[in-house]
Length: 165
Image (cartoon, rainbow, N blue to C red; front, side, top):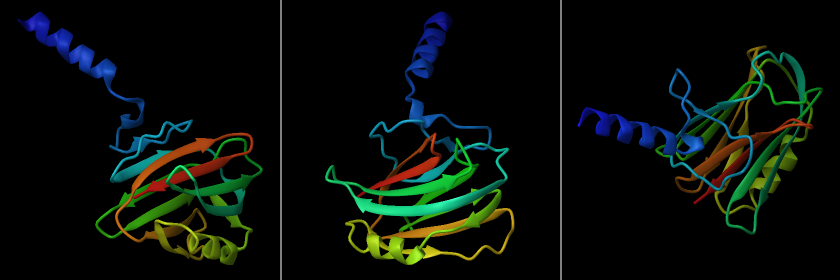
């Protein structure tokens, strides 16, 4: 009986999906590729913790014909995105994005804000000024609670946030 229980526990552990990997603080690890696995709520982390001096060169927003809206954060001077956290809070209909390190922001926030108006899920974007030299934040406000998928791409470094109703 004890061996059967251990085998069952082992099988369940091995069959756990990759998107649900939790680090020691209980955050989900951002994926390295798109898997079409959306989560209703939670925090996602990823990126290179040692990145310090970099530039956010663009934040692109677009609707996708597959039924989701995509936010892409582009970086220069990096092959992998810096350490980041994306928090999906369905109760406030908001997704908060925090990028850590010595961030320089060099893109048109108005272009991103106008692009967000053409999507199905996003009501508006709020880009915050850099008040802490070691982080930059912005919020994605949604029409209704959304499901999110977060992954990172390299060469060039990008964070991808897909939002689905």
